[in-house]
Length: 531
Ligand code: DGJ
Image 1 (cartoon, rainbow, N blue to C red):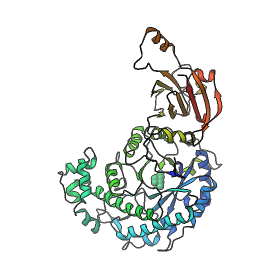
Image 2 (cartoon, helix red, strand yellow; image 1 turned 90 degrees about the vertical axis):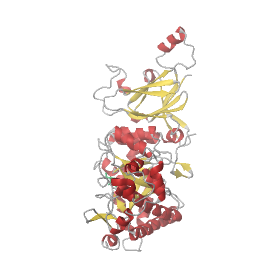
Image 3 (cartoon, rainbow, N blue to C red; image 1 turned 90 degrees about the horizontal axis):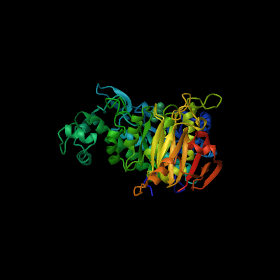
Image 4 (cartoon, rainbow, N blue to C red; image 1 turned 60 degrees about the vertical axis):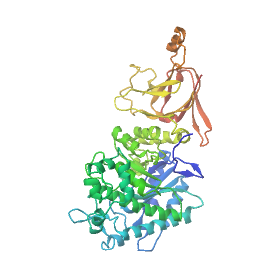
């Protein structure tokens, strides 16, 4: 049994959403989505993420028009896709771009964040009750509309509340209400959280400020108090939307995050109060109705990529990646998320731009699309084996020519060469012209049964001596000469959701003598070794 918290379901069964997010303004009308549907096909996606804009659905206060949902639902259904809606409400990338004009034009009622210099920012304040009430009403109307239009077909599988919430340009709101809160006692559960989580940055800040049991935000958290208070405040604000939405229609609800605290110095350079890793505990405490908090991962360094995966893959928060790059290193790194951090869903952003005007994949996006297709083929296996230690990420880091896997009775020697390199001059070395870095998954379904997807790489399975083996000279000689255990079968094929395997092409002879290879066009490869 695996222990992955599968937040997303379809027909009561765990579902692994894989696909793309459209550009910010493509959700306004169907015409703009034409390219998106084509790109989703190129990704072999099963789900699309599309925003719904507060300003569009409530153009006049209290007058709602959710007819856009009809178009989105029709498009998704026609293309056999599930749909995740993104609520662009109070926050869009730490600002207020998608709020209705009647909100934007009435700053006395719908108050803005005030910077330390006393200037209003282009951000609605989470300390203003009118903002919360207006957004919460619109959000709950959205859930009503979803229920009305989709309760039978259930095309919509989740809603993201806000988009990269936080304050761009300030650590906190310096307006009078927020400042009064800042100097008021920190809620007791927040103070206990700081005391109870040694090893976290919240605890360190609390200790550095004198480890008091109670006090105001700056008394408890020193110079980081502004960010922590804002996180607490925004998490509570989002929690109120989640509660209001779920009362109407109980869908999974998520929150996404603009990362940045690893490489930016101050909150405000990244949206302050967003659920960055260091304040994730605050969000988990203050927003229990949010099903998961998800990093938007656009970093190219593997170290930063894995850091993000590790931070958000917790017992109380499964990793879900709602946005990632449509070109570049994401083609490889996504397999870290799937293989090593049990990601329960994965999306890339701005999918329309993956295609050229003729509708063909642009060269820079082709590797990402191939990786998504590989991941799609492996979904039944991901659902079955994530969380068991049997899913292994293959990622060719720069200059690497090989990787080793511990596969129970075997060591998997993975070389980053494809079928065309069967007898490469240097044996170990990929040809310099090998165009794509190797990436993919090796999944061990049983002691002697393996699935490979991705590429270009090949695996040689080397039998390990059993721990209790009597290593006679004869046995040692046998192992030394045992270049590869025998293969019962090596097949390319596909797997149904229920795990039924459909072989489409057999390999034998020359095609298995140098190991079992994977390449994107081969789809899923199954190898059964002799015992
Ligand atoms: C992250 C945001 O969430 C998206 O809406 C979009 O603005 C992308 N960044 C652009 O890269």
